[in-house]
Length: 125
Image (cartoon, one colour):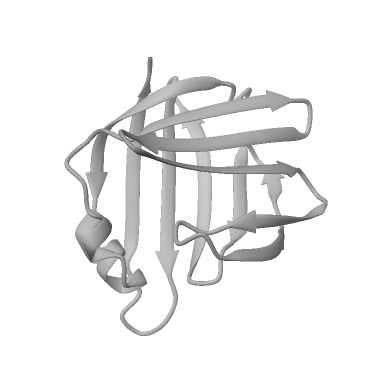
């Protein structure tokens, strides 16, 4: 299913716990996060934004690329697309995203004994 679209967060689970696990609790916001995805075949541009802040990554499915974390740290990863789900291993968590009933569902799971599973559901704008 095509991911292209602009989405606004409407529901999220374990948001604060996830930010705390990443050491980013000070980045907590009450603003709705807007995610814009541009897909051209296997090439993606994935941008998340709130007022006064944006975070963007460009990648090609199945090819190693340089990505940026929310903190601005760069790392290399291969983004995969399997069974309609995008997945990538970030330094501190496993990221997945899929379209379910015209909504963008993103999940991030931190590793370790006290791993945190964060989930955000965003509606198409």
